[in-house]
Length: 189
Length: 420
Image 1: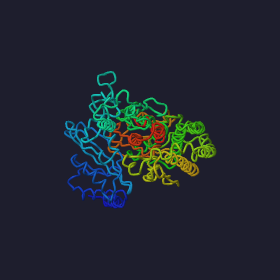
Image 2: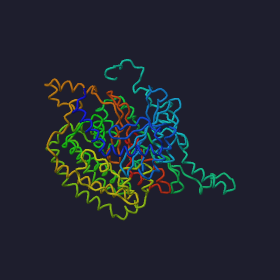
Image 3: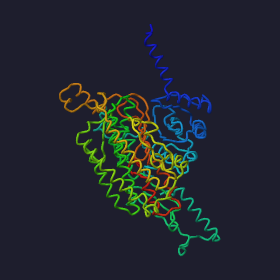
């Protein structure tokens, strides 16, 4: 039997959430995304801590970010940051790129994620849209081995040039894996 | 070292010269008129104020291209952070922008608090604001006085460094250390302001404005200084945004983006202050914007100190906030929590958080992905220096070497933040 007071409180929460300006803005952005690029382009729409997060495919990422940059309504003119990520247990989706965009005019942030296989880590570059993408992409290449097609100068940026692996991938543990005197499963050393 | 593509321009000039000479190989050994000089600015050059290299191609006095090499003090903070409990990451943030470590510390604490859903009491928020604004003043003082040194004016530097020393004494009184502060905790501050700290702060607030005025009158309308900085290294607002500029460098170009106003954190919405903006984004504007921000920070500190609310200086969150040491010896729960926190056995929710604060150089962002474990699954730092320094190679083209030095110091590139 459902508890009527509980039901009421969840309903009240929902209306409160609907009136929340962040939620409203996010709904507006999401509607725009669906209108511009089609609903099927986006999967896994979430709002962790008020920041709208969508997942898409890498074939669309350049189009989407270019479209958002040119959009006259929301004006996503600012690429805040981007970073690589590695989930080794997600088969054929091991690597990812996460983009943070910011519309300074309306003060809305948007996070876009793409995932792709480790064996084929190729992503279109954003350097033609944002000059700032240059070093961010070099960093992602340096640490995750993600290849950005069309990047003018894809070299390592923080690590030495003759390094032959990409250190932020999860397959490289932080400490020397051959040492046995430091294995303690409980305290992580 | 692989030759960078920005050198392509240089090769083109040589090629054109060759064509003019009827396909003859130029420059010849005896012909210096067309020869370009390669000049290493850095990695250890006293005027770069940090370890980074620029390989400049010079045509006489003019810079034709600059190729930056960074990473000399890369310490793999993002990788290290994947093996550390949350409170052990604070010392890593100290070492990013070490001119204003309290901002980094508190930005990180607020990120974790956002993930955990901890509400910080007003008093702790105001205390944080005071410390963060002190850090901003220290940061800007260093940048602007070093800019003076690079243009040949040593006096201002020595003069304001005394004031920076006093700020560091206040830090010492509040948290016990000076440069790499590790200030505060997840959930608030580690201790309340002592009466000595308040007294030092009040004394400094009274004395500092006179010094700052003198510093400004030494530089702001100084003919020699203005000749060196006006119209040097300008950047337009569009270009600055495209390059991801934030902070004083972006505001000098005329964009009024400040995280403290746009997305207020730690009760910044309670205070009244102005955001100074420049017009053409040159070195002089960057200097003036930083100076004005020091005055605005003073305003904020005065308001926060006068209205400092009573109450606890940390959140009531025993799972995340270390209990006082005396309680650990006497009280069972305190001992348990102490052990769990120190061993990193606290529970964190699964989720992802992006939190940014207005650092000394711009939007300092923390992107934290938690998988519920004792450490972050992934932690990415949005380091403002790293992002805007890439514009440097474009900004120096066509200027002279002495201008390049001035542009570099006016951008306030901190090697620790650049390389993480």
